[in-house]
Image 1 (cartoon, helix red, strand yellow):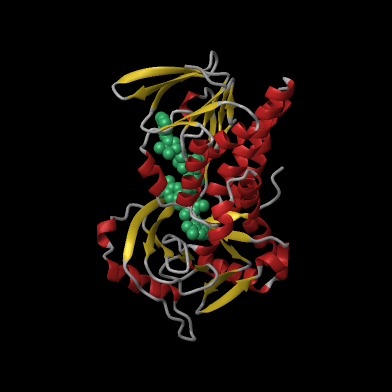
Image 2 (cartoon, rainbow, N blue to C red; image 1 turned 180 degrees about the vertical axis):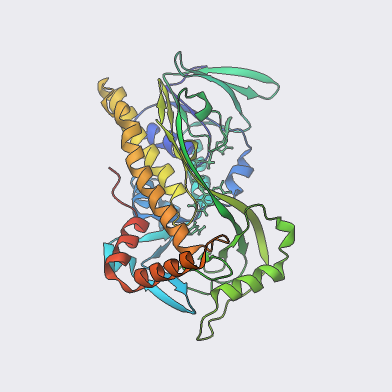
Length: 385
Ligand code: FAD
Ligand code: DHB
């Protein structure tokens, strides 16, 4: 078997890369270890920067996004019993859109298959060679080899791409908390997202549709989900979102729940020989600020342009610049995610002094046009390059 670009991983990064390459007339094969149903239903991110929706729309994969995505112009920071709006669009001219990662993956799988693309599920890559480029993958009981010009490691944080880069430098930070996320069949209690800081811990009210709410709670990193029956989740959310003027949280049946650890991680460089890392394979952010999926989209947009240049003109310039170009954006998002996380979460080990500083910081962000503009600029996403 042979293709031009072998793509490991059929998450948003791998699928979008394959789609963007197809538009440039470049062949690829996507090898995904899980089955299609699993990949299409894994609950994860939901908030898209304008740059992300632009890429999906301009590449012809945005039809359902345009119909069903919910465009937002602001968000709320809530602490001390009161809300403080950050008017994202007034401050930046940009919007963000709520559209779940599951839906992007469904749209991209459908689009690749309709275009005759080669997307293989239950095809786990077990080995790769970045120099005489090839990947070896399981195909039922057999293993097969796919020869290629280049390999894109879009295989997430636990994949095989990153460990194949020799001499990699890594930068990491763990946080003393995790997120318990739920999906609930209940109309959202808010039109805009609420990021709440409370002594009991952080909480986030997001949504998926006018009928479905998505909510998150800060919990200890080693928390057992069995310790969180429905009533405890709703009571805790209500306590953390409570305001002095009696705001009410609507409750409904919980249809999905999971706990996500929080970490910051960057690998440098994002390239070795003919292997390129993109998305979570190369970097992880804590979810506060919703940057993970958006970074995966910006990485593969830059990578697709570099492959297009290479195949159209033979020039390697953009491929050679890929890692540095992406890492500049990655580090900005790393800083913003770290900043939002430490601003809003309650560190159980924080001293009284640190808690007072944190509250002062929140008061400042809520009251300063300059600070809100900085938050809004980063949240809505900085330009691609
Ligand atoms: P992934 O989506 O991880 O896709 C990688 C794919 O590679 C997977 O489908 C995997 O099965 C496949 N794979 C792995 N190894 C192999 C192999 N050897 N062979 C073949 N295939 C392989 N971001 C937010 O902004 N907000 C959130 O609320 C949020 N919640 C998250 C919750 C969880 C549990 C996780 C893990 C991430 C969350 N993120 C969130 C981050 C966001 O979802 C990711 O940044 C995004 O999925 C990155 O896309 P990706 O394609 O790079 O990686
Ligand atoms: C969502 C997740 C986030 O991490 C975030 O900051 C905003 C929204 C979500 O899943 O909707």
